[in-house]
Image (cartoon, rainbow, N blue to C red):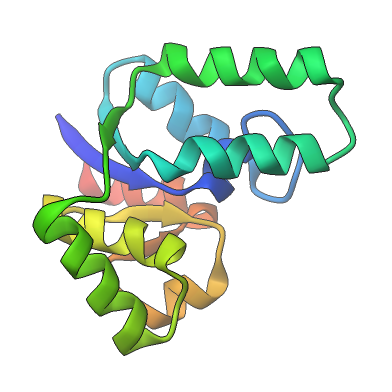
Length: 144
């Protein structure tokens, strides 16, 4: 089974209607069907809940429910420690990105996989590692 990393910009699209939500939901559905596994830094939970809260779409109770829903997905969760932490710092400094963004890149490098994002800057800075979610269906078909 193929493992991928996703960033918060993807998981947020599971709860908010945004550009490329359809592709993000397709990735989610492939995960639910067991076609791929998802690894994330623990930071993802903070970022998703913060985005959902600030969207103004959900009440406090509904944001809490989003938090419970995210837990149920059972992602492979990684804490920023050891070699993974050192790689994240290196990526952040060398590529002038936040440690938050670097944590996704570093995790994908650590796991020797790719990560999906809606962040155009990350896709430009990390070709071959960061893939734009708009291309998810094409990537999946290309892999067979």
